[in-house]
Image 1 (cartoon, rainbow, N blue to C red):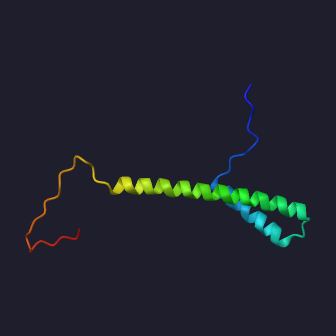
Image 2 (image 1 turned 90 degrees about the vertical axis):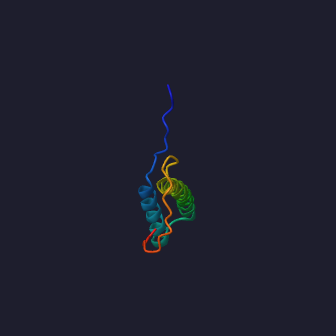
Image 3 (image 1 turned 135 degrees about the vertical axis):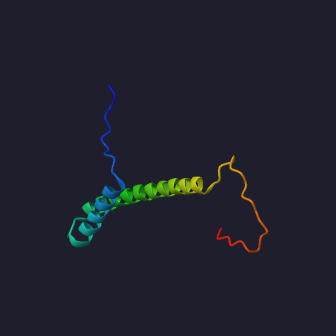
Length: 90
């Protein structure tokens, strides 16, 4: 029987919310040193996870943008007219 993972997968928004809560808690509460260290460790993990997610999202957006701006290989070339009376915007 396969073992179930005890780690919960967070969405980016959930991770940011938890990270914000950790920061507020560390700033406002008088916590024992060990609790502060534990919260810092959790915050560092969440920060890394958020950064990884953002890097991945950026790469995906770049791929999408490149796909949209590339011309299909089988499209005919645009006619380049030397007509001076013609106004071209692009």
